[in-house]
Image 1: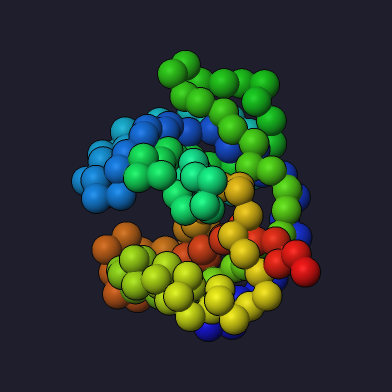
Image 2 (image 1 turned 30 degrees about the vertical axis):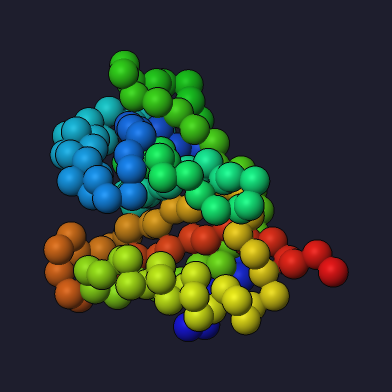
Length: 158
């Protein structure tokens, strides 16, 4: 696993969100089914890429709560034309480890990031959203699908 380490500028997104528990993957599919028919309402899209975002609430020990927010969204230039019943969010700027994920088993990719790459990287997870960018090589449900996983990181303090 050799991620790109990038400084990412803030990203403005518009979409839909809900709170789920770790095992409620069916709610992710339902959220995307709600968002996709409304994507055309976003008048200032930066690109056709989709963004799946997770916002974890960290406990004092740094572990995430069982409940977390998920978003189905897309990047926009501004929030001047907000479609009714959609939400806006600004992903803060910061350092991200960017991993290319291939196939359908995202859980395995995240497990490898957290158990293999992260402990030996010199970084820890930062308290910012995690997100995935699904561009032209993303093929929903296909073993040939590709997407970029953005994991928020910061250097370990000495």
